[in-house]
Image 1 (cartoon, rainbow, N blue to C red):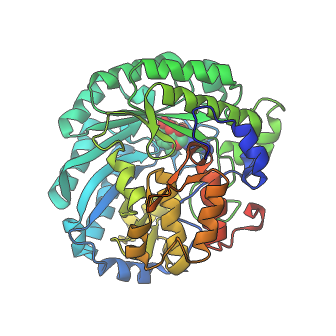
Image 2: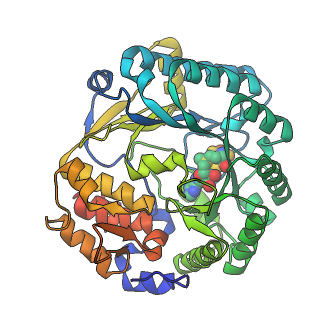
Length: 478
Ligand SMILES: C[S@@+](CC[C@H](N)C(=O)[O-])C[C@H]1O[C@@H](n2cnc3c(N)ncnc32)[C@H](O)[C@@H]1O
Ligand code: SF4
């Protein structure tokens, strides 16, 4: 088992060439590849009768506005100059309209147990206090939020001044997530961020002062990064008292070009842009993983744990070690209700099959459907069952970086992963390669640190492609 703090990820990649995925091929989506596409009407009909009453669920609200467009970003968003506040009113109303339409369609929705709400984007923190209040009052008045519901406001450093933070806390937000990406002004400028390192540090200081959990997003694989520069930056972030550090590897695969039904093209997806970047500016795959390895060691030494993978939380921040937003979403694959352009969700209710919902990624199309056609802005659904559903669930569990409980999987899917193929072969291949630990006395598999470091690649290759027999676009097959 590979589970020391010193993992040579370059050697792991050398020994497992199938996991070498270059930057421009690298993408990771948890929901979209599997299942048969189903029409909007059929999806809504199944949605309306879903047995979600009393079951745990999570809410995601996508605010697709950004003050600036970062060159790497493949999320659904559009530029908001900040001059015309009616745009914020318009988006708040559109999101409320979508939510109300679902509440009318699906009576169970108001009785689902909402364990977490995530206001993301784009940049949710661009909304003003009055918009955040409108949205919160709507949620509290129409959904059953659990008493300890974790309510996150996500934004950029330039959004989080003292006034905004205090207003958010007054409204009931109890977790913050801020995208830092880097603490190097040269990198920030290169990627088109509209803030510098000083603003980032100030925002973290203001947020940490609240004593509510604060996550920061950090990307590895950005231009100019080196092992030393990144290690120094993450030391600084840790010293600021950040509760959680999410480490993302730069994903530069062109989701649109690949025919996937989420996200947008990033500036760097466009060939002419990436060709214009001088060779050697981006770290190589090996360098990227050296950086990742060093960060893992540093975070472990400073008392952070991967929970779930890539979201490193300081021990003691969350009662059971893992924050609610991903906890039951990944560990139990509980339902995810998602609103906004490009948002995608899934209804599971602890059952074997999954009903996915996909909203239009085209922002004008989304608004046209909500405002002019007065219809639910759903693009289509996907229905995932059988081996694909098991592969999805196991992939989620692996990503959670928690125990993969054999008996729980047996109870939910009626399969014995210890003895039935192809599950047995896939899981024990991962054990032999050092990506999963299988304690002899136990009835579970546990991802190792090497498994954590390469979890996206492993989910892609071993769970989606091998277990799920996923038919990926040609250039994504390995
Ligand atoms: C969609 S953004 C929204 C948050 C906020 N607007 C911000 O920029 O911090 C959430 C996070 O996704 C990550 N992200 C966006 N595009 C990415 C990409 N192409 N590869 C890796 N991570 C990416 C960034 O770390 C970002 O903070
Ligand atoms: S990273 Fe954040 S601010 Fe930058 S374009 Fe993406 S969503 Fe907008």
